[in-house]
Image (cartoon, rainbow, N blue to C red; front, top):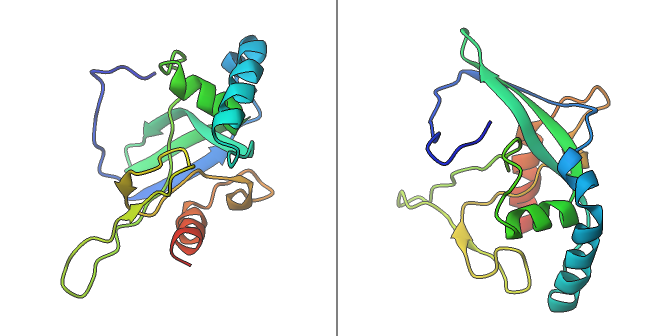
Length: 156
């Protein structure tokens, strides 16, 4: 699904984001290596937390301009291993919602991630993982809720 030369920007009118019940085969196949990597990374960064992570498993843009996307559930330690070993499984992507917040002067608000976090020192708009709190009982992902939650977490 994902190739380095496949970067595209889509204009969409709406989004239908849902979870699927499929397990992440990469995480199961690499469980021992993931656990070993997690032990090492927790020693280096004790603040890391192995919470739920949703990864984009498939998507399409319909003729009506709807982004129809399905996400699978995993955990942070598996995501971290995947990311730090070169994104070897190209059947999934990291996906998240983000907001551009403008000041009265028209400048974009960026936050700098504190040291000790995954993206420590980097600046970006308030954003983060889609987590379990963003998923309804029917499996629908409320991306607006995710963005509002992240803004609240990051800006107080």
